[in-house]
Image (cartoon, rainbow, N blue to C red; front, side, top):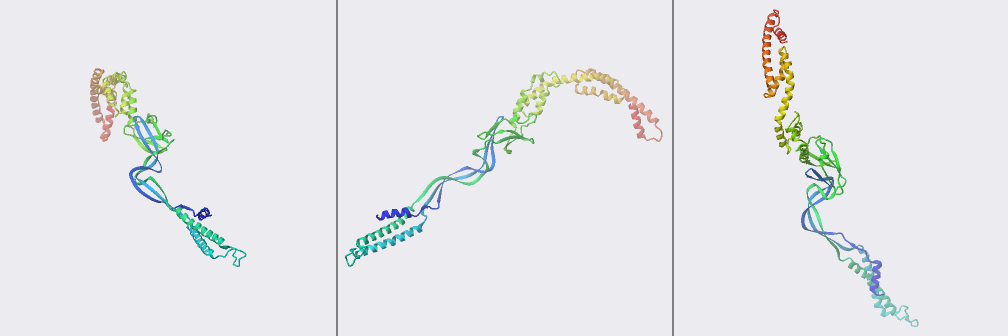
Length: 399
C-alpha cells in the first residue's frame, strides 16, 4: 500500500466536510422601468364604455413603482466545515512520518534476526525498514488528507441573474394586469337607490352589460348623472349617464307618431310629445320635437277653442239669468275668460253680444244697489255705529 492509497483511504473515512460560505452579492444597474407589485387585498377595476355597453375588468390591487433592473452576481466560496479535523490529521501524520524516518534511519544499526547470532534481534533490519516505511507512508497519507481538504475547499460557486429592485411608489392603487378576479360580483347603482346585481365576471375577469337593463325605466336619468360600479360590494368607479340618456331618448322618440300630433283630432293629441320634451329637454331629438309641437299648435288651438266654446255656450243663459251682482260676476266669468283666451274663437260673436247685454244689466244692478244703499243708510238708527251700519247695508243691497 503506497502513501496515495493510504491518503485515499484516510480521506474516504476521515476527510472534513466541505460546504458553501455565506453569499456575497454584487449588483450592477442595467436599466430603469416601472413595474407592478401586489399590494393589499383590495380590488381595482377598469371601466370601459362603448356606446350603450359597459365593460368591467376586475383585477387584484397592485402598486406601481419605479424599478431598476440589476445584473446580480451571487458568489459563495467553498469552505472547510471542520478544520479542526484536518489539524488533528496533519499533526498525527507528521508524528507518524517523523517516527517512520527515525526508524528508517536507525534500521541500519538493527541486528539481524538470526537466532543463532549472539546479537539476535527479532525485528531485523528488513522488518525495521518495512515498519519505518509504513509509518512514513501512513504519516504522509494523513498529511495528504489535510492537503486534499484544502484543495476541496478552494474555489467558489457563482450565479448571475437579472433582478428588478423596487424604488419610489408612483401609485398604490393600480390593477395587477396579470392577476384578474374571476367570479366577482358586479352591481350597478344610480343616485340614492339600492344597487342592482348585474352578474359575475368570467374566467378572464371581465363582464360586459347594458346599464339600461338594470336601471328602472320609470326612473328619470339625466345626461349629467353618474352610474356607480361595485365589485364585490365595493365601489370601484363611476361612469357618465350620457350614453344611457341618449339610448332612452332615442327609443322614446322612435315610439312617437308625428302625424297624430301635427294633424290632431283631440286636444291631448300631442301629450306624448310634450311629455317627451319634459323628460328629454337636452336630447338630440328635442329640436325636432319642438318643431312638431309648433306645427301642431294651430290645430290644437282650434280644438281647445271648440271644446271651450262648447262649455261656454251652455253658460250664457245661466249668466243672463242672474239677478245679483255677486252671482252675475261668478256666473259670467267663464265668458270673460273665453273672450280673453280666444279673441278670434268660434264663439266670439255670441260671447261678445252676451257680455254687452250683461254689462247693461250689471250697470242697472249697480244703480239699484246705490239707491238701496242710500235708503238703508238713512234708515239706520241714530247713535248706531256707522261702519257696522254701512256693512249691513252693503250686504243687504248686494243680494
